[in-house]
Amino acid sequence: MPVNATWDSDAQKVIRLTIEGQWSWAEFYSTTLTIIAMMERVRTRVNFIVESRTDYVPDEALRQLEAASNFFLHPQAGITVMIGTRGYLRNLTSAFGHLYPKAALRLMVAETADEARALLTERPMERAAQPTYINYQTP
Image (cartoon, one colour):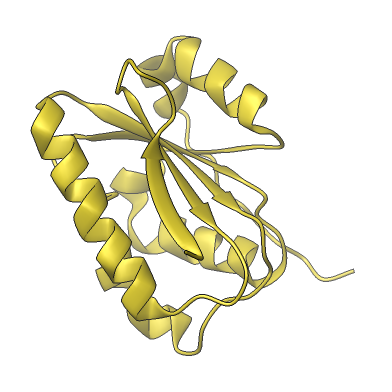
């Protein structure tokens, strides 16, 4: 499945969302329902590692941004670390940060999954107090 959510470890504190290939908004929304159910089963704050393995983003991404971000805004949602953001997805992440500045305080960017895990273990709420805005500029 092009959009998949799994626990990053048996501790069930981090959900790993992986996006690859040509995916649809229906697949994404279906996975967000799975993510919400996962969070509600553990009843604690949950952090996210979101890895995009593709540059593909379906049409109408800006129009879909609010609905697509529902799990990021869930009361149990902690910090989100994005890895693999480039091109249009990088711009979309930046737009999210500007549209939802409070939520953007909990948004970070890493190059690898190991770096993302390190960010989440190094005093994550302290780091989250420092916003990370992604400003993509074309070369």
